[in-house]
Length: 241
Ligand SMILES: [Fe+2]
Image (cartoon, rainbow, N blue to C red; front, side):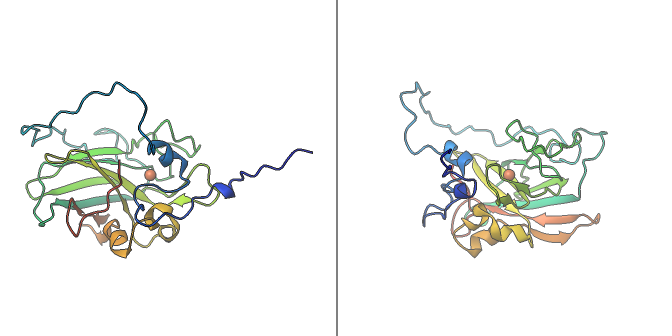
């Protein structure tokens, strides 16, 4: 008789996160563990570091419309799903606006599928949705994305872990040596309470900081306000690279 396997899917469910390491690693989250090696990567001929210098660009050349994720190109059909706007400001520790900050956003479609080779979920792609956008903050530190509301999606390899709706953000600007990465969650979502990443945040303040504030926009679409603070006591929780 064949020996019963001890590695069931349920046994691979994420374990609680150790205090103080909440944002460094979700224990048992195979994809993240693979990307977060605990030891040096052997004898690689790594390119040496050099300084960024004082002349890193303050201005990035972004084409108009790169912050509109609802169409893959101007004049093309609109993506499926509820249209939303995500707006906010990027601020420093003293509340001053950070201008010229390059913000990239990426997300799944309204059915829960990323347009990415790693996403093999079988959930349908939307031919009119790429799920990526870019923008640069203005003089007042403001940004805006026009997009569709992403769906929740199941995490591969787990029976009961479903990521709640969220949008990924990357920030990069003069004075930032490594880009900053975080996620915006949506308010009132039942799955927020059961998500290992959202609940790996240290406290309710951090969870509130990563939850967009909903309001009714001028054109009827819901607007989510999501400010990001780079440092200080009100710092936005960022994932370690
Ligand atoms: Fe995601």
